[in-house]
Image (tube, rainbow, N blue to C red):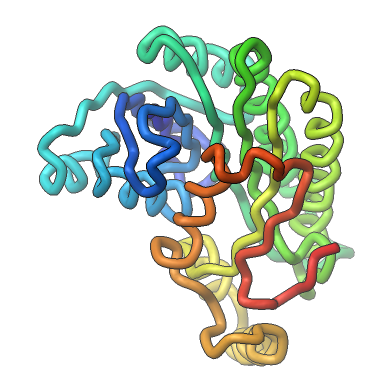
Length: 276
């Protein structure tokens, strides 16, 4: 298995990356797969790598020492990655493929969120949102395509319920996620003939990005966010747990158990929105 980790929590998304070789036993059918994970510094990317590491996956970067201390068989190699730079995405993937001798899956977990009233969104914030959420997704998908084209594989892109049911102050974020949604469905159709399955995952789980978003809100808006989640989620919790609720779904989607699943928006959200 391979994970390549983007370590920046704030844009632009620069930082060290790690390349690791492993076998993963969360689902037996992904044992020995070569999987690339972006967005490793925190949130979904980090939780996925940590959960996989507990089952024999090698992970790295600044939190690698923490993971390595729990998993003595960890193998680490660092590499810089900026997902907004096409050349860096290509270079990182090329290095990963050389290191492992192949690639089976991409879990692209890099994203950016920012709040502002629709009428006052600055050019710089629009550019940043487009660069990270849209260009970054397209660049990473394009970078892995040549290696998946010859043998098939899986791609998981980051999505959000806010693409279809936006909240106030997040018009530009919602728009960027709608673009990712359309891109995912389009490339699933185009690349299916190569045996490449492309899906988008819509998680409603606690992440540092959600924490940061809520911390930036006025007190009354935090209450409003809680009310929104309480009204929407069918289950008791407002948000799910990344390791318990989300990571097993990601493992399923990169395994052969999901071989007939592609072009889908996969909600892991407790019923917050009903995807169709």
